Length: 124
Image (cartoon, rainbow, N blue to C red; front, side, top):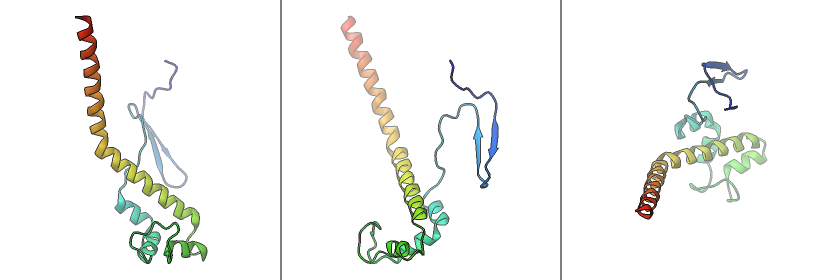
């Protein structure tokens, strides 16, 4: 009680072309994307990253990093690169959650069953 409860659907169009929908039953918002989507949204960064000296460059402090060089030379906006890194991190988290979330849910379910079993044995 006292919480906002949606009883109808509503679509909100955002000025930048995006959209948000408020529907009954939706409790969270998450990305619907993958590495391909990230690559197509940031082709300039993907191209620069392929030019780094090291194939596993983290773009932090490695020598001959094409991303750092592009930021220093004002070819690449630092905020754009931060957005790219943030989205990449979120995608990795979602992938981890999809792979390991069900295992955690299963573990919690059996933990609860075990607790109920212990409580039942105490009552006997």
